[in-house]
Image 1: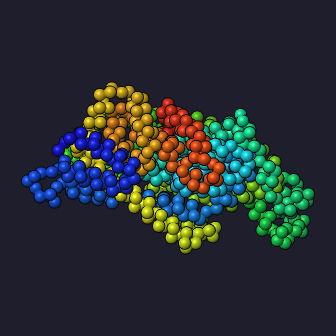
Image 2: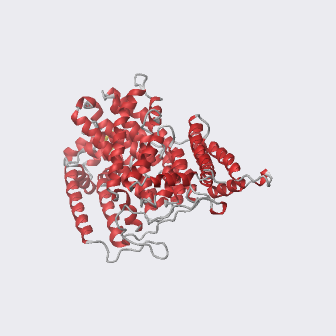
Image 3: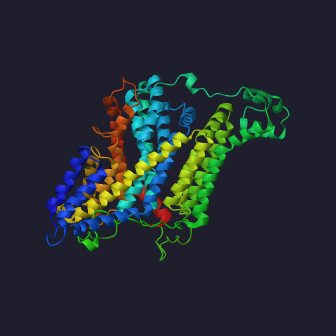
Length: 607
């Protein structure tokens, strides 16, 4: 039975009931079964034969057999193990020394660590709380403005849910029937671009008003240098790479030096020289990888994994009846793809190899990198070498794991699920090698992973039942007809949909918005010729504001829980407000410049 009024009543009830504090998943399922029972009610049948129970079984089975969702517990486990077993304090200290001469150095360090740690863990609440404990008090003791200190923690802590690997992206992929791999590639640049906009704001504010971020005292910017290094310079040369290289071939004078643990050994000389090669190895390795992928491997030759699992939510199953989805042309709003899929589903490489512009650009970038490295190595003394060693020991292992997890997904070597398994195993290895993960913390990580995964899976089952009944009652068709009757342009529809999601972000969590309300807009995207990947990534950025928008800004309450008593919730809200404006600016730039979002997936996969 189709009754659009009941469908709209369902939609209104779900918001009211969730705001009253009832569990979202079971509220969705309960309302879906209740209204579905009415929609399928037949007096001639026994109530046990009502078709709503068949619908519940079908949708539950669809969620249980969705391969895409397997990656959620693995990525969540990776995050919880990282959060309990990695060395954030050492990472914060080493990055602080690296940016000690930059304005608002502590705030910049906090943003970088929040971004990096958020990528590795993907846990917003944990990152905000962790950085609140580590970074807030040092910034306040250094005389930083409370709004600057609290704003950078709350804004930076939310970036992990946007930048891959992100659970939110996986949930959207399952809801919208899109490829997780393509969404990961699409969200890569916008996520880092948003972090870059945050960085510009922090440094710019500190330059315009230095009082909000006073210069750090000398004891916080001094790099601890071993006592033997100045004596080593006097024996060889002030340039550490050149001196260590000479000492490898004539070690007699160096081996006579005393250190804190005894005489300097040849192995120590070799390790320090290897540390000097880390920046060169990173730059050269990146350039070689780009050259290999573009020139040798062939562009767009990687197979994009197909989206599998749940059908797109927001429409009823065909066999149970329901409104037909809207038709329309293929999604536009992006430049022409670099390649087109062949019959096997794999994107065919562009004929003729890379364009001349690639070789010119690559040559310019390589030349600039060579000049920067030459200047960097020419001025490398003991302090710079010690910073490299600190960064290598604290940041490098986690960076390698994160890059490996993302690279194997984006280059098509593994699926998202297999990559998540690699990430979870790597997180355990890093934590065990750092000797920071004991049996108690391991049990906590596994328990929290099971709890989070169960919540997400129940949400999917409840949302699947709710969405199907909502469409069967005609609620989806009524909303589509209303939107189409407005005769909106694609830009107006984009603004309307994102404004609604932005407002929903005040009282609701991102999981509820993605699973309940996003499916309402999905069938309309084809009509307005909007790419669902572009629209989805803009939604991801939009939901950053949900964590930063009063009065229900979860990041603010996470930080308030660990902040000193004199830091008020209003001060935290005031610190977050500028970042909300930056989020809106980022969304506008993404719509005006779709290549920011769509260039990488089109380059890697052709479409």
